[in-house]
Length: 345
Length: 267
Ligand SMILES: Nc1ncnc2c1ncn2[C@@H]1O[C@H](COP(=O)(O)OP(=O)(O)O)[C@@H](O)[C@H]1O
Ligand SMILES: [Mg+2]
Image 1 (cartoon, chains in turn red, blue):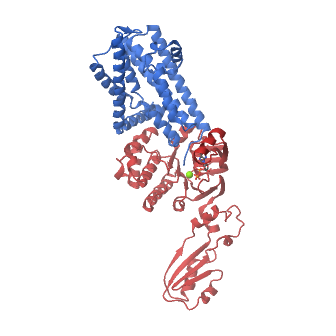
Image 2: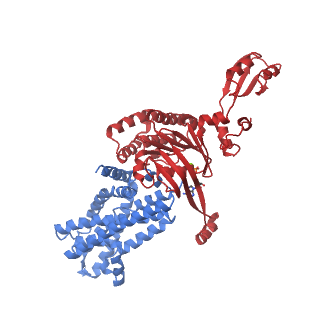
């Protein structure tokens, strides 16, 4: 039985139809016009224990709404939802004991009291055994580098520090399930890195199930094996990240730095059919299908004709790939589509 | 019983936050002291024109009445209502909902945390004011003193019930400020905080009797002064308990409705 099982999960919001300005507000006061917004539209989702799922989609796609239903904060309009044997909104507190939640845009810490006191409150709220609490706090403090601001009120620390502290707070009670809603939003690379490493260690060492929404594709490649894409409230893709890359990001590019400008690239082209070559002064790049050629074969072919000083390989760009999915240029639901056709330059 | 611990911690945190905002607390206190001193002068003038007693109140009794009103008004300052509705409007309740705590109990703990401190400060300030104005009437006997404490506790529960229900309206309206101001105005009149209810015309007294507000100040003050006979005291305590429980249930229902029907705002 999956840890998370959603069937036809739907959330409809009633949004006020209001024209801008005072006049608009007045009009609304008398006419009270509303329209329905299907924020989450009949989604089916099952997540097994130990999985790490990236939940992606453009702004307003319905990611946060889904997470709020999974955590029991919002009551679904229709559909069924069971998380670890419980219906979250019916057994809110019981569900809450088993989950950790981090909202990137909202802190769980108490603003006015030192960070460590928020942690102590978590200890009491989640009834964490004292020894376990001490162990976890010690370990997390070390891994996330919390010591320097432990005694400062949350209102007076930086965003990066706050996120690290929030993450610590969400995991002190060893939740089975960790929900992260845009955990790295607005953070610099070093902090992102630290946070990702930490989350990965939870997944690998404790088998914590992670569901993460993000805009930042770095989060996905570091943490998640599975990727679910939602757009306009509907799930438009659900699958393995590696498979996605294999299917749609088959092309790789090798960039060579040459000792002197090549006289002609014709002989290399002849040796590497179906590859795209481009030169620019001392640079030569070869785009190839990695299921047709191995990178080594490309390198050998090039080196047999010209003198190579240096080279590097571009990884397939998940980012570009996912952008295409958003833009509707790539339909992931039809695997029959020939892959090379969609992976244009 | 281990459940109690989390709410105790929440209460302690709330007290700690009051200390963080001590400047606000002190200013608020100074404001109420000015107010109570003004009331003293006002009533003193009235009593000077009518020596003896007014509707059964002597001047020392009136002073005691005003100080009891001051004491009870110093508990659960409207800060809590403000914070609660703000949390609702800005969607911070989402964080609370993701925690293994009962929302109402957690808010109750948060509201109660500073109460012992508020009580002691008000008692100290009240004692000073009483001394300056030449002393006040003391409770008739230890029984009345004990009953007074019971009515104070119940009055606090009633106040919390009202504040909680008013806060809940923030789920449906953005204009909570108006509701809070109205609540305070109505409460000041019908709780007997400004004028003891016996001074009211019959119609107003009738209205006061069916509203929860009299349970907040009038009942404890009259119990303190021993103005009610035994059975009436017990009846009034029963009325307080009725409101305390009724409002708690009403608040719970409002919350449940809000969470089901209304959406939690924001990100
Ligand atoms: N409380 C709400 N009331 C009305 N509409 C909402 C509310 N919350 C979200 N929405 C709408 O639902 C849609 C999905 O929002 P959300 O789940 O926050 O998107 P995401 O997290 O993917 O950016 C958006 O169109 C948003 O405007
Ligand atoms: Mg969001």
